[in-house]
Length: 84
View 1 (cartoon, rainbow, N blue to C red):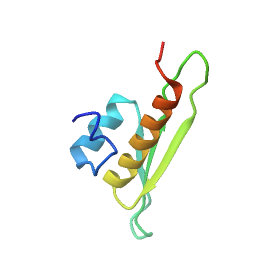
View 2: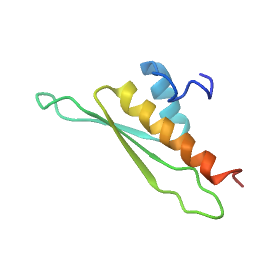
View 3: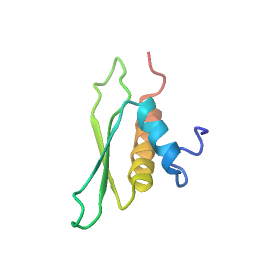
């Protein structure tokens, strides 16, 4: 999976799970019977200047929740500049 694809477009389920493993993220699903929702949770990249925070992204599918989390993660990485 290329960096330009992660979160920029839809992810496949395999790409989503691979990305979550690489960034040590978690994926949750509401109980069956409830309106279906998925939650992807990841920590933002750390840097010397700023402590990590949590990204909590919701979606109607695991791919949507993970794509949203990946987009926010990349935005945070870009805002922090080079990591040390």
